[in-house]
Structure formats: structure tokens, C-alpha cells
Length: 173
Image (cartoon, rainbow, N blue to C red; front, side, top):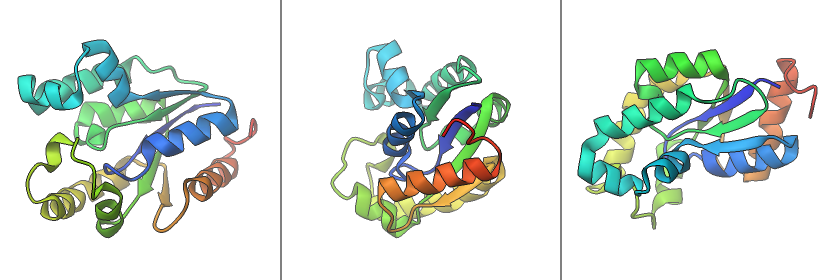
């Protein structure tokens, strides 16, 4: 099966859905943020603080370029598609799935999360502005869009698998 790459805003469920999808399809799961942390031996917040967002995006590109093209589920960071090179690599490596969560849903999911370096100020304002600016990029990059609003991770995973089957990618499901 072609590699499945999950994109979407922070809090859209990429890591959770990636893990569930990997379990259901018997595929390896790579979380690009966790892979960067593993390789660098530093948290994402530490990388941002010490080296800035530009360095983090370089590390993200490196991880994406090293991805296999088959039998892998990839959960990316919310900003991964912002860089044109990353979009090109993702499209080349597999099927890109956009997990679409509206701002209100993201706010609810991240209300108690203080670990994200890009949400240090007014969380609601940051989420709304970033989501609006990123939406065209997510839509342009995605092969499939899944609305995650008010759905359980299990329901989202079922919809994703059904969408893959429609595209002819679900033969191993």
C-alpha cells in the first residue's frame, strides 16, 4: 500500500489517527515531530527556542525526504505543508490526507495543552489566524479531505479507510 501522509492543523488528530490507522492496516507509523525529537535529543519547544522555526522546518524536510513510499502511515506536524519542498515530497511519497478540524474544535482539543511553541500568546487568536492562512495550503496539498468535527478517532479512521478503498488503495484493509 502506498504511504499515507496525514496533514492538518495542530490538534486535528494526526498522531491519534495515524496510530489507529497503523493498527487497523498493520502498517508502521512515523510521527515526524517525534522523529525530530528522537534525532535531535531535544523537545520541539527546545528546538524552536534554540534554533528557531526555520531550523525546525529544515529538520522536518529531512525526515519527510527519508520516508518510505510504501506500507507506512505518517503523521506530520501542522506546519509541514507550509514549505513548498515539503508539499512536493509528500505528494511524491504517497497519498496525502487532510484531517480538517475547524478552529472551535481545535480550541477545545488544545485548551489545556501548553506545550506548543506557536501558541504562546492569545491561543484563540493564534489558532484562528494560522488556520485561516494555512487552509488553502492544506486543501491544495491533500488528495483526500476528512472532516473531523465532532467525530471520535475511530469514526475518523473508518471514514479514512473507506476513502482509501474508493481510491483503490484499500485492498489490504
